[in-house]
Length: 423
Ligand code: NAP
Image (cartoon, rainbow, N blue to C red):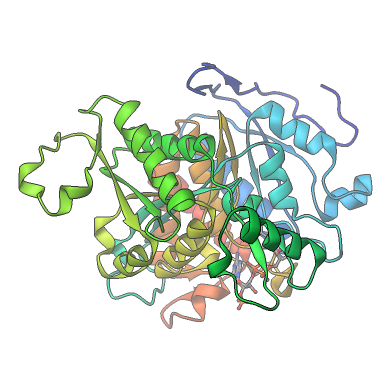
């Protein structure tokens, strides 16, 4: 394929789909991987993280051929638009990519570039591993108990929500329909109201839960918890839980995946749980927010509709040290777009100050998606050694008296030194 502004690397091979049914990938040892450095602090953390990821891949016998693609500010400079078609096409064609943060342009009619990318590429699961690294300041007494991966549905629920503003003709039409045709007049107050609809589908729920269960199986996790508010929103959140349990019950052998019955917690002794099976259970979202703090080590993989995932994944991230270190990725069918949780932090942009750890660890998740678990482990170990030995960026330095504050570039160089020492 020829591009207008993208320069493909001189060498490297494409990642392709190996199996149309499962979405499994055929991954060469020299893949071409598109990268968007990002806006704001993306210009600092993007190149720094790229160097660390290159070094870790090389140290484990692989060769990443990066292909820089453009979105946000760099795209406006080159193409006079925010998200050029060839950027989306390049990511679509190469299946696995990584991006730094993009600023959402302010002004009417601008969609978030991040949301546009996720929707265009149908990246239906937002995945955030939340684990503790030694040396990271945390507000918790035992932050090391956190080792969880959240799967947040990325395309529906409130992301596909429709709302009508109080006082408009449309909201009155909807009110009339709900009251007169559907017979719900007793719950509608008189006077102005706002109304919203949140759709949750069988397809969206099942593919998200399937992705979480497959992840649990492949990564030797014990449990997948479906988190919803089905006691109140029975036909959206509750249905998410039902469809999720159906996936667990019907699509996997019992000795591989065990769908926990509702009665499990009362009759635990009488239920025969296969020893090596991944257990799939349901929990209510409000209780889950408490348990995540009080019984952190009991949870493993969580799968949730969009809005619950928004709250829970941010709360989980705060427990292990916050935005500078929180990685993420968006998974689709045989697709992965890795990106940190944080945004472009304009206040810190261009100062060679921001923490590149979140983007580096997003790269770790991307490499694990490719099956490069050894590369991923090396990255984690090198980052942890760097932070634990007291070489940190400003955000962690201000919370630690024993640490030395270094720039983004110096931090990345220390991580690369540690990759060399550990490999
Ligand atoms: P933000 O960019 O995440 O930054 C908020 C604050 O978090 C920063 O000022 C900084 O705090 C801290 N922070 C974030 N990343 C850090 C890092 N790598 N190292 C050190 N500190 C870090 O959130 P925002 O200011 O609300 O959003 C700015 C823009 O980013 C908006 O246009 C938003 O739409 C966009 N955004 C994009 C994405 C994405 O691309 N996926 C995600 C979220 C937001 P201190 O200044 O206190 O140190």
